[in-house]
Image (cartoon, rainbow, N blue to C red; front, side, top):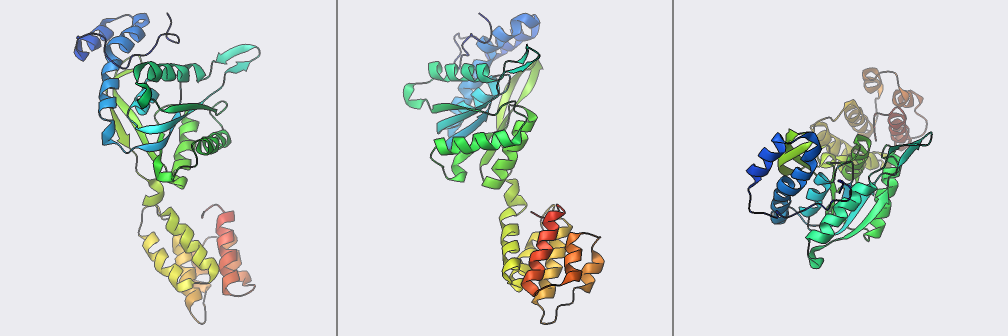
Amino acid sequence: MNSETRTLLIRPTSAESLQVGVQRLLSAADSERAAIYEAQVFPFAAVRFRAERDQFPSAELLLLPIGTQPYSPLLAALSTTTKKVAMLVTEPQVEAGVLRSPGSRPTAQRVIDALTQGLDEADLPEIELFSIGTGTSGHAVVQAVDAALFWAGDPWPSDVAVDVSGGRKATTSALGGIASIAGFRQFYIEGRALAGGYYVDEERHALTDISTLMRYDDRKTATALLEAGAFAEAAALLVEIDSTQCSGPAVRWLLDLARALADSEPDLSALARSMPECSARDALSERVGGNKECARLFIEGLRRDGVWR
């Protein structure tokens, strides 16, 4: 029985300890390690993660990227109390008639089989597979996540959990960006390496909400206030944003703009001198229309040059 057909166990089948299994794994030949790990080491992690799942927030939907190994995604699923699991899978890749990669659908099936056979029916979440092509296209990941959200009934963002442990780097990068913008909760599984890609002492770690840390919503609000002509209110909010990490020079330029436009006789010359040559600075010199139009063109210039979103 090869690894793709062998059912992963999520409960130990003997009274032997984890330490015994680890020692057998370390002393075994490479060809024997997968079977030993799956029968005598991994089940202990599975039992622990399942027992500790109440320590983590429940979710309406778990987004689970699937890579070449089933262990991390299975632990992610076992540690999350959820109604629905959306597995993001890659497709087989063939070049010149040669199969380069079988894709991750076989891995996803191993995770599904382990959950189906290891959990009671009442505890088994509904599972659906969503294709992300080769796993390198951010557009494909966005489409898959959009489809998964629709399938799950468009749950509230804080009720969506995203595991970023597995899958290709491009996939997890795209998922991290989506989660930061949408407000999904992110986590990952990390363990201590034993040998040959096998791990022990796995732990689940929650990731920081980067969009909140960088005040993404406040940035949007400040931009809207500027475009609406509420310059004093925009300046007050931009002062707070400027104190956060990674605020960037655009925040200070927008703050100076808001303060200047809030004045009855705006003087934008100092702001223009402080800026490098760019589209936003050109908007200051053109000064077509009123103050609101000036703010709109300035923001448009920053966006065009890629320094404000």
